[in-house]
Image 1: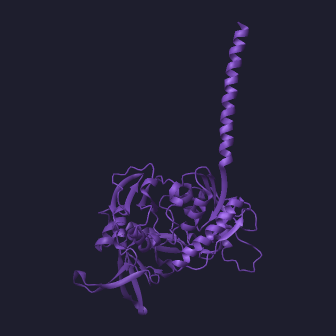
Image 2 (image 1 turned 90 degrees about the vertical axis):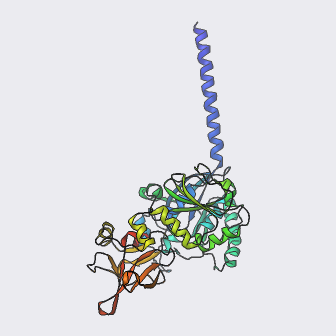
Image 3 (image 1 turned 30 degrees about the vertical axis):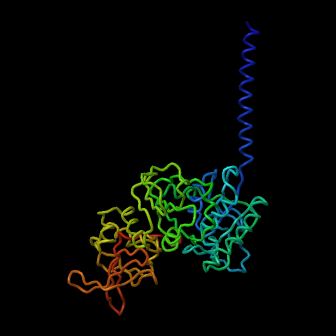
Length: 426
């Protein structure tokens, strides 16, 4: 009986160790496919979110790289963002560590996505994010990544020049020490779905077969916009991209995909034509539009989606409505810290706190708008002659401008169609 029990125990142990060995072998094989590369393309919140949603990316973390001092903090990289060229201190740039399974997504797909994600021709900035901590960079860890980075840089430079862009300013360097950013920066846009996430892409693309061929687009949660494009030449897709999508800076995520490139969405619209614009919430289609739309039409649909038809902000934006005096949003915005007010839909900067003043009227008041951000036109409604202020890109109604004392102007602006961004986040 004892021999029988020992035999059973031996069989069980053998099975256990065999299974453990198989699992260990699978883990070893998987680890062989895991590679790392580092990308800097402006504010790391959006860059991390972008790469974290690519199929084949195992993990993406925000941090700092490229400087010559130890233990950088977010405050450090902001303080050093305007260093002169003769400074002995080299600042770190906001960088995202991307770990990926090379059997599922290639280094070339990732690097081409990096070029398309931002404007690599901008030096020490991305849009309104200004400073050397926002400089563009690729930090490679393998010779293959280095080769691909330089090859695709040359390819993308030709594509950019054909569209009127200048020289690529991106640094391509071997990876150095990666300093992980503070906890509150990690997965920031997952935890704050309406957080600051501008789109700085040029709209210039590699051929459609590249990044989209092997990468699946899955829901990110909350509100998002998917634009379904053709995997072959589509003139109306290109027109929509050039006129509207490439300059979109709003805080609702906007992504392009081919119809066979999406996974996990609840979509009722038949994806038989391109472009098709899908307005999604928590992975489920809320409504859609099939075919090309003008910029004005796009922002009207976005207003319905983000603001909600019948809300105060929607009435102001599209029906020339007016906030109530001393409304809740006015109370929130009247004493903000230093920063800017942006269009709630397009994300464009419209007004600056440096030009704000308290008029006692119960509405936000500014001496001026940001240059080129608004349009002014005569308004003869209600038997009066006023000058209406309109957001140039989205076309939404903002308020009116009136003469003010001492030959100044008072831009009387509705708070419910604005968002606020602190200056240290620009």
